[in-house]
Image (cartoon, rainbow, N blue to C red; front, top):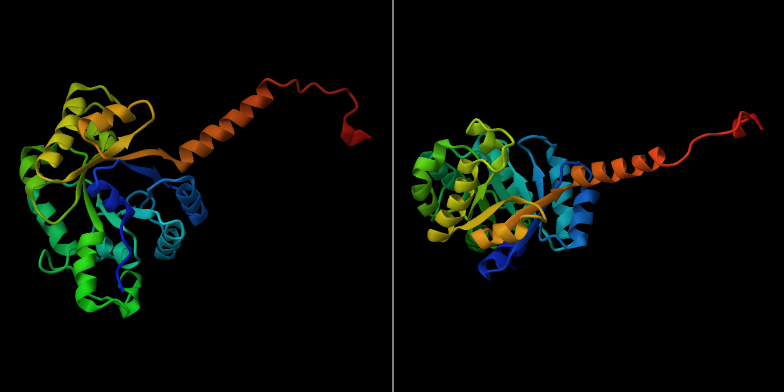
Length: 268
């Protein structure tokens, strides 16, 4: 028996682009819908949303049913906050606001098994097929088929960025422009020179050291991001799509005459 392969890692290692969609809503049917639509990866969030673990498990099942990967952005905390999504059989985790090389080393140590790190071993949960997966196979394939992403979204780690990218044991550097813009004192200024420079630098340094580069984007700049070296792009979110759809529907009422006769149908 083998561990379920990561669709994301398979495509990245083949030099292909990976599509990702962010989910804010708790209903796992939304994740299933995104996976049915063809996204390689669905991203749910524990940093800002804090869904309970049964909801995370339901998202895992929903994406697995469509052979898509589930990425969980974890809340910053203890090792258990990082490995619990993996033990539920999420395919990858993303740690927000990485601040230093020392912190990156600790994350690798907490999330990778021997010989890379010292991740606590259980094997009795979904990722280990409830002990049906051979012990040695479990440790080896968990290191190979589950991805760890470090998020660069602050100016503080830039001085050590080259050393962080050179560190073994994780898979991807992910540039987060939103918080980065705030960190440089220019919130929401997406064309700020420092932001543009850093977005390019993160991709360059990641690829230089054999890591993958990820970020957020949209249809308008997708080609540009790919040309920079970003292979993993999260594009769109459920709440954005639903909000836009609802607003478009409401506009119809503004363009349709709502005048009624003095005797309404309720009076008939």
